[in-house]
Image 1 (cartoon, one colour):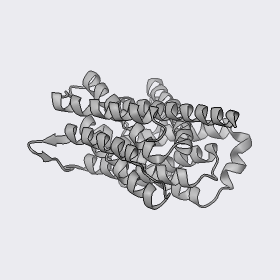
Image 2 (tube, rainbow, N blue to C red; image 1 turned 90 degrees about the vertical axis):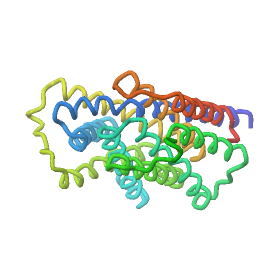
Image 3 (cartoon, one colour; image 1 turned 120 degrees about the horizontal axis):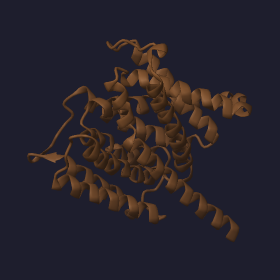
Image 4 (tube, rainbow, N blue to C red; image 1 turned 30 degrees about the horizontal axis):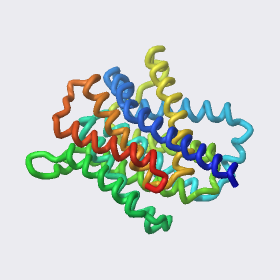
Length: 296
């Protein structure tokens, strides 16, 4: 009994670390993607090549598990579609839009997660859990409130961000629901999903698709670095989602908003007002509370 409790406690700690690690990675991944776009490689193209690398590495490292990963329930198809849309639209939104504004729209996802987990997973959300989500949303709304009103999406990047947040919530709930899928299968589904979604987007984009032979070594090194970071983040996040409630995952992942905001402050000419810093502080407090409170 004691051993089981210790194992569960360790799993919970690793899960929380995994979610926070993923939040940091996704909070900064927009910067190398922007570097590639400035070099003439669009977000769709760089995502395609990045996930080609990820799938290729997966095929080699997990070669013995490849057949088992393919023979999975139909739920893996939905996971690939949802995760593919979420990851790709997030990248496109964060490249073309204002970082903080895009992140705020994306992180309305706890609201969608709360609704989905309540009605789909039948997870009880106690008062503490609701309080954490409310505090997080207050922080987001505080950062997003302008001129006495909550500003709505006003360009393609912001609508993509909103849809990515909805996709993120559905991906989390489906990952939790599909408990019979292995960690490697879930991760593979994410990478293949983004790869296939990129192929669909390529058909509709006006920018020319770059020939891999025309890209220099430095550009390939940036994409290799992105692929490695995203692979690690995906594995950690999938582990975290599997071992802790999805409402708690959403709150913890909101730490990404603060990481992105600070990154935008130092890496771009975007600035944060006192109101935005206050909202970010509320989100950090909620994330820390969720990470240390097993009942949240």
